[in-house]
Length: 141
Image (tube, rainbow, N blue to C red; front, side, top):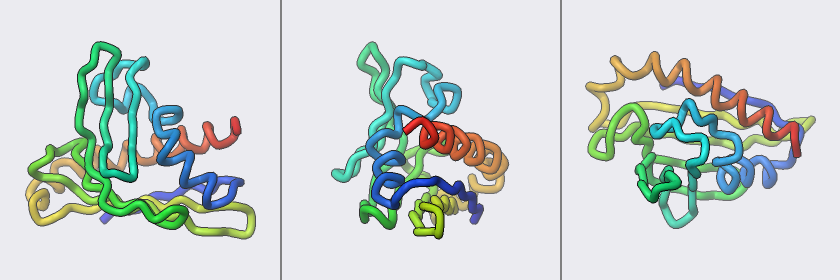
């Protein structure tokens, strides 16, 4: 398992909503499968986690398993793998003295265990960049 975090000067509710409902505002285009800055990423309580391009292409990015606002989000994660071999991402929203710490825990599942060794370095490089982008977006609010 790998783990990364970012501290935001906001309530847990606001941090959760920023991470989930406004994911497209902060997820960098160079970390999207389409690389299209006009694409939109959506994450919903009903289970969908997709990227939609302006021409209508829909790219599955994962599946939402738990949506426990404002404390936890759990995803099957297809980026770097595929829907048949997802990894698991748990996102925890912890209250701190100055706001909220968002903790991302990423690990293989049984179906992706063989891929993990070849993909983990990519995940280790990507999560800090994603959380940095989230932190920048939080500073704009």
